[in-house]
Each structure stands twice: as C-alpha cells, then as structure tokens.
Image 1: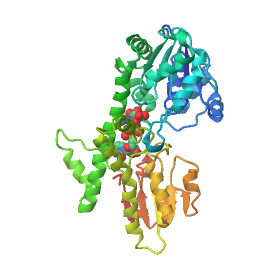
Image 2: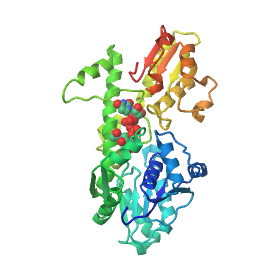
Image 3: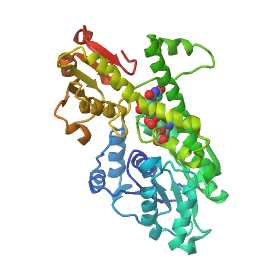
Image 4: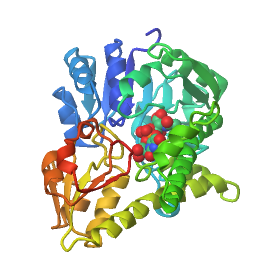
Length: 406
Ligand code: SAJ
C-alpha cells in the first residue's frame, strides 16, 4: 500500500464498484461515492445492484471487513478514482457532464500530494480538462497534485479477473503524475503497466474499442453478404480462420453495450474528415438489428398470427446489462411493426425494461415456455442458459440463430 491509505472511488457501476472492492480487500480504506441513493444503501448492506460473477461475494466481504463504505458525498482521501459514464448526446457528441460533476464533487476534498485518476473512457483532452477544472477553484494545487488517465479495460462478465490481470496504460498530465499513478496501480494489478502522456492514453483506449468495432462490423457485413448469397456464414468464418493470419470475429444481431457502440464516435468526433472506416463500421453495426428484423418479418409473413420467441435481451452473453442492447432494439422494432406476439425469455432480468413493457404484445416468460409456444424462435443472445436447448421443442419451427450457437 505504501504511501496511500484512503481511496475515494466516484461512480459505483461496473468499473467503480469492482475496483473499490478489490482495493478494500487489499487493505485500503475505501469510500465509494454514487449519486444513486439506492446503490449506496444496497452496498452498505453488503449487497450489489448489478450482475457480475463473484462480485456479490467480494462486495460483501469488503463491506464486512469495514474497509468499504458507500456514501452520496466524497471525503478527504489520498487517491481519487473517477469511474463515471461517458455517453454521447445528440449527433454523437461526447457527454462529459458526469466527469464534470464528479470532478466538482471531489475538488473541495483535494489536498497536496493527492492522486486523481480518471478511469472513464474519455475523448482526447478530457484528463487535461479535469486538471484545469480543479485548478479553477483550487489554483493553489497547481503542480501539487498528480492527475492521470488510466482507462479501464475490463470485459463485463470477467471483470474481477481482468481488473487484476490485464496490462494497463497510464497517461499522466505530466510524467510525475504518470509515475505516481503507476506506483499506485502496481499495488493491486498483476499485469504490466505502461506509462505515457494523458492524450496518448485516451486515444489508445478509444483505438482498442474501435479496432474491435471495425472487426465485428466486418463479420456482420460478411453475414449479410452470406445471407444474400445463401451461404452459411459460420462455416465460411470457421474455414477462413484456418488461415494462420485470419481471425474473423463472430457476427451477431449488432453491437451493444456502453463502450464499443459509443467510444468510436469520440474518434469520429475528433477527426470527422479522416475517421472514415471507423464511422462506416459504426453504421454497419448499427444497421444489423434492422437486417435481423427484416429476416423475421419475411418468415412471419407465412403465419396468420405469428408467435415469436425472442431469446435474450442483454447486450451479450451471461450478463444482465441491457444498455445499448441490439436485442432490446430488435424486440422493440418487432413490436412497433406489429409483427406478432413476442415471447421474451431473459434469465438475467426479472421485469421488462420500460421501453418494452409498454407494448401489450410483449410477454416476459421462461425459456422453455417461449420455445414451446412459438412458431418462430429468434436467438438474440448466446446465454449459457440457452445452450442446451431441448431439440424436440424446436423441431419443425423456424429458427433464426443470430449468434450461431445452435
Ligand atoms: N460482439 C459481436 N461479435 C464478436 C464480439 C462481440 O457481435 O465477435 C458484440 C457483443 O455481443 C456485444 C458487443 O459486440 O454486443 C461488445 O461486446 P464485447 O465483448 O466485444 O465488448 P464489451 O463492450 O463487453 O467490452 C469492451 C472490451 N474492449 C475490447 O475488447 C477491445 C473491454 O475490454 C473494454 O474494457 C470495454 O469494452 C469497455 O468498457 O470499454
């Protein structure tokens, strides 16, 4: 632990809560801060508000040890970690309001020698802005605090493992900030830690997610081409990937989540005339749900009153996160277009999101019930729970498997 004892983590979501809990189990005194009262209350009871493997056990033990406490307001600490959302607003412009309010919230509590880390994925220049915002009201801290960007890199579903084992990139607003942040991360990260300047770290993180988006777009485009040509895309990919330098990703119903579907826009926004491939990849992936809806409609037109089982709502397998989920979008489009009765099975949620609950033709039900009653089975998410399907239940039905799981 060295020279740090108290850590204040602002934002107790998919990144902040696991980070706060791991730090607490390493012996730090951690104060987790969130604007949602319910989140704060739940965490203080040792409970969690999100689904992530083993996180419940970790949070419980961190809270029981007395090292993790949640609050609506920050307090003095040695290290401040900002882990709040960075979505986009109209015309895909970055929305930095959460970073700005988190910065305002911690500024009064900052003291000489403190380390401030921005973990939220951010447009180029954000870390410098955080520093300037702090200095606006605390000019006496100029050159006396350390500020760095350490973009989170964890994969939902494997957060606890990746938080500790992934290599990390740290960009400081100056080199001493980068070194200070590196020394702090070395106390709980096993991966390599590479230092650079803040802007390079910001773009590196955006480049990672854009790289994945472009590659998924390639797979999605290929799947549309294969559908048109009547060729099995899964077989094409399997065979192409036998080449030693080819590794095509998996097509799906589209790209969801709050990262890959968002971050490339920060690059497009910063360099609109040059980010041509990155922008097109976003459009290809965003157009995939409509393509799936067309396929369903084509099949549904054979039935007078089609019943469609829509399997999965989350943005990817084995998580409960519905944010920017193509599956939700597809179900909504099917409902809007009155394609038929929609039986939704999503083992990770107890109720439909508001955007779907308003449609009378959508019903949340169990996996086997949906299969049993449906004419058309639309697999949207490759949840483990859907893997061992009872073949007898889908025999003779139209199956559209957007994930290639069956
Ligand atoms: N997807 C496909 N085909 C694939 C892979 C993914 O359609 O072959 C879809 C998924 O179903 C999902 C979306 O893409 O809808 C994104 O899923 P993902 O597993 O690729 O990524 P995320 O959003 O869960 O996490 C990503 C990760 N980034 C990279 O892999 C480069 C993670 O390491 C980041 O920390 C995270 O974004 C983030 O928070 O930025």
